[in-house]
Figure 1 (cartoon, rainbow, N blue to C red):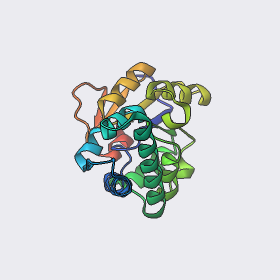
Figure 2 (cartoon, one colour; figure 1 turned 90 degrees about the vertical axis):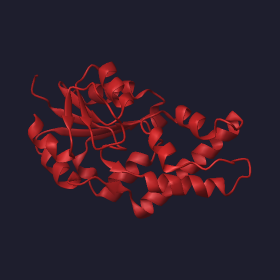
Figure 3 (cartoon, rainbow, N blue to C red; figure 1 turned 180 degrees about the vertical axis):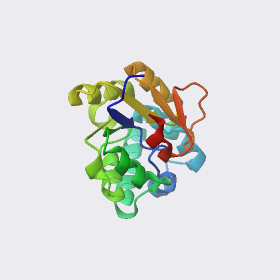
Length: 208
């Protein structure tokens, strides 16, 4: 493989977990509306990691009128960002030191299928903002994860990037962008087909 110049990261299940915050935020919205009759569990939230907004709306509120379902989901996501900005999420072990070390040799970016403000909440509460040169999300561009990866590569003029993620949708996005995929096995997904595998974020330091 050619010498890489950049790491592009997925967020949930790769850099941090916000399951508890998501469940709390969804419950807060549920308590406001009688039309929301189903609890959204941690398992349900985990099963939706890596999916687009529209796919998540369908899984969370598929039994509700679509227009209302979209409104409820947006409110829940906004509430989650509000909660995360106050309390943060759970960073994976060894994340801070690994990001700092990698940034000395490579450009670092984030691409996630999330709403606007979500990546920003990670950057602010993790205190790692200075180590990432760019980020992009479906909530802003309305593009697929693969297209957003390509967008970040193009506007930063990267020559040899890899994408680090934990779900099959991350693998598919990397394949679409025609870059190698690094499977973060400690995350939410179970993947058998990948280019590289890490069991801890710190494994990236010696992988290449």
